[in-house]
Image (cartoon, rainbow, N blue to C red):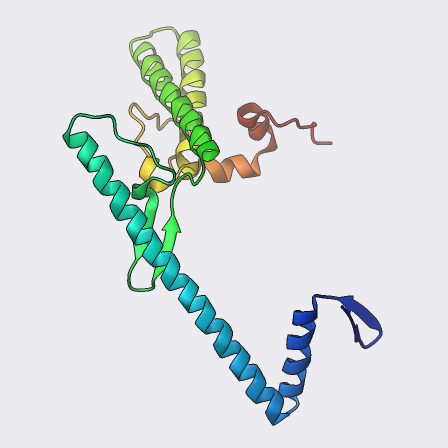
Length: 210
């Protein structure tokens, strides 16, 4: 639907145009428009509330059913199912009636997460291995090489760890605190600011600054 506003024409859905017209009339003091607008807003809020209540109830049932099934399988020594989303990733807030998902909601997302966690585990192994090599070394050249590798893998660990949902976070063992080492909780911010770093860690192409 085309709506004219001063010297401009705006395309918008018909229902939006109706709300817009009623809103303008209400602002000008039209009592009928004010009453109509109030009723419409109340109706929309009621529908939204009903939808939220229905979603919360469904989430509670889903979380409870799958949690019980997983617990039963673990108790019986059976490999538990892997529902998506996992019940542990469904966060319920009874006070507000809100439902939040902190984890994969599709199988594809789960596969991506598992690949990231596997790479993070590799980074941990590399950090621990290099740290063992670095500490007893007396060669300044080798220590510098070890430290570069240590810091590179540590940053990879931190980038992934900062990005995954809270339930999947881990603490890095053998963390380096020397100059140039990444800090837990800051790796993603640094990555976003540094184009060269994104090229190294994410494979993004970049051109030299003029």
